[in-house]
Structure formats: structure tokens, C-alpha cells
Amino acid sequence: MRASKAEALKAELAAALIMAAAEAALLDIAAERSAAGRLQTIMAACAFQDLVGQRLSKVSRLVGGEAEPADALLNGPAAAGEGLSQAEADALFG
Image (cartoon, rainbow, N blue to C red; front, side, top):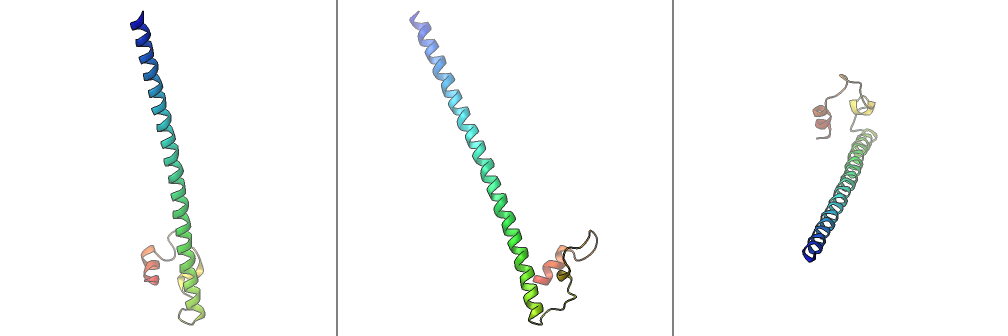
């Protein structure tokens, strides 16, 4: 009978360890997803800031007489297949 209680205690302890490890793993997964969401927010903000900086720089050059109003980037986004390619846009900001 004593061996049976000892075995039951060992099984109960093992089950508790398994559950604790599973709960810890779920918390780690939730933390990773949360961190990934924050990183996506940071990247979106950086991309927006970069775009705004490019536009402000272009407008500043236009006001200073260094750019022409017909420059393609002052016309906003183009429809698919029209306007500048990414390489051409990058070259303008070289």
C-alpha cells in the first residue's frame, strides 16, 4: 500500500511539472506574439517617417528653387504600371 501512495505522489508531481511547463510555454508564445506586434508597429512608423521625410525634403527643394514642380514625386502615388519604379524613386533621393 505504501508503494502505491508513493507512486501516486510521483505521478501527481509529474503531472504538476508538466502543467507548469505547458503554462510557461504558453506565456512565452504570448510574449513572442506581443513583441512581434510591437516590432511591426515600429517598422510601420519608421516607414511612414521615412516617406514623410522624403516628401518634406522634396518640397523644401521645390521651395528653394532646386526642384521643378513637374518632378514625378510631387504628383503622389501612381497607378500600377505608371509613374516611377522604386529604383527611379530611390535615385531621385540618392
